[in-house]
Length: 152
Image 1 (cartoon, helix red, strand yellow):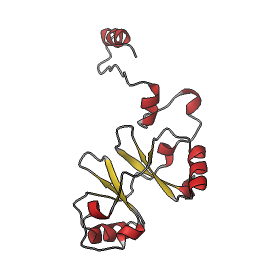
Image 2 (cartoon, helix red, strand yellow):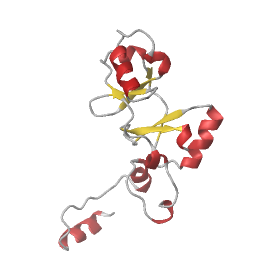
Image 3 (tube, one colour):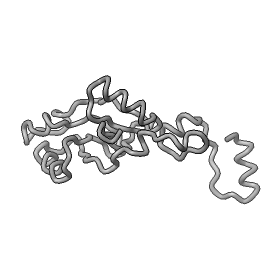
Image 4 (tube, helix red, strand yellow):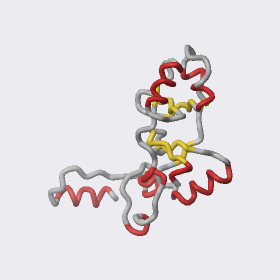
């Protein structure tokens, strides 16, 4: 919305008005609500598992493995204090040296997808690249969840 429109809304009594300059695509990529023709199309952010196990880079792999197994998972997303995705611990890394730090065992900088990617597009990507899951993040890299192939 333009600054002029924001000022007008404030003059009409609306309290918290913002000038969102990043644009519509960034709005969708951040997983924010959609309207219009996009509402009926399922997107990655709509069905991503938001309770995916996470850990810090300084956590020990053995402790992470125990937590992931308790949650019946097979992957852990390594995040910083702001929940920005740094890496991924898949089953192979989780079954490695229990005393290792997550940051030394993780796959750094995993491929991520935005919440605005249609589920149908993600299903095609999973088939073509023989993947079982994908990390879903905002455009700023903040974890939204994990999308599993079985959910598409």
